[in-house]
Image (tube, rainbow, N blue to C red):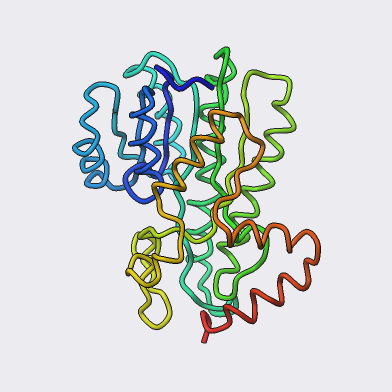
Amino acid sequence: MNLTNKVIVVTGGGNGIGREVVLTLLTRGARVAAVDLRPEGLAEVAAAAGAGERLTTHAVDVTSRAEVDALPEAVIAAHGQVDALVNVAGIIQRFAPFSELRREEMEKVMAVNFWGVVSTCQAFLPHLRQRPEAAIVNVSSMGAFVPVPGQTVYGASKAAVKLLTEGLYAELRDSSVRVTAVYPGGVATHITENSGVRMPGGADMTDSKTAASLTTPQSAAEQIIAGLEKGSYRVVIGKDARMVDTLSRLAPKRATDLIADKMKDLVG
């Protein structure tokens, strides 16, 4: 996909990877509709972009079907068309074993990570199919490959996104809509803070020591956009994600045991 003058909707566009996707798309000549739950994040992105009418911001809760269903009309009214959907919005769960999670905690993770993707894909797909060249890019996670202690429901939500996206690819192969699944490993973002949870031991994904071993949001965004441009089937981001991806296919039990041993401190 040539990005010049394409209209691209980005969920989670007010922070982290989504913010960098928005800013980078604008530098490539695209028009962007940035979607986020937090108006303040969207305002900051708009100020940083300085892109004028090429960027519109939409404060939308992706767990609200009514808000999502109204979004295509708002985007088309502002930009005249929609050519691509990039689903970045996501949260993690509280670091706790499955047996200790409250049902409402699980439902919130699934509502944002899975049903939010379902709703946006349903809302925008009819419009995308009308375009001569279009795309859907859904961000899953390395956590879809193997389980991580204390993040079982998060992993399940991202595995659901993986299969949903692969199913969309299979159904849309003969259409104008390219479909890409993205699997980031560790990225230095504020996802724990934005999810309302705390890392065990007070760790911070953005502190200098931790962040040095992680992919930057800017690099992740560049790789996502490269996948969008190429119409890639899948994009795996980071050495950690590539290692887990390979090992989970060659020796799935060994991969599960390895991650469980390495990350067991996450659940005390």
